[in-house]
Image (cartoon, rainbow, N blue to C red; front, side):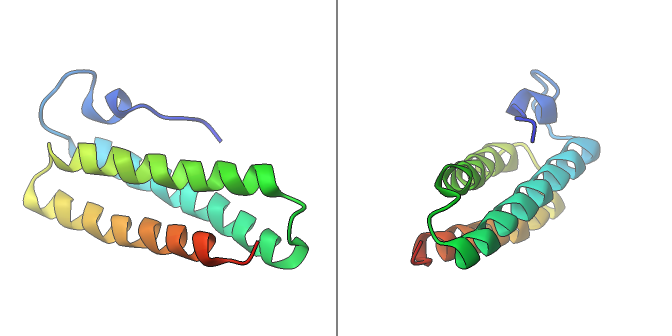
Length: 102
């Protein structure tokens, strides 16, 4: 999975996020969630066999939450609402991964 930088979403210096940049970021978040859920499900079945991938998934979730907070600063109200809903999903999965007896 590729790593994205906030400049990819803010256009390298623009102060207002575009609809396309928010859509791309939300797609990135969905990819991160999909990967993290795969690792979570794998950890439920195999316990400690995938520790590195599990930790990577947790780090990706954390980075997505941090990037989301940064992106939200340059969004309009509708975009912030979309990002808020995504943040809730990311944070719920983060919590689930932390609480899993892995």
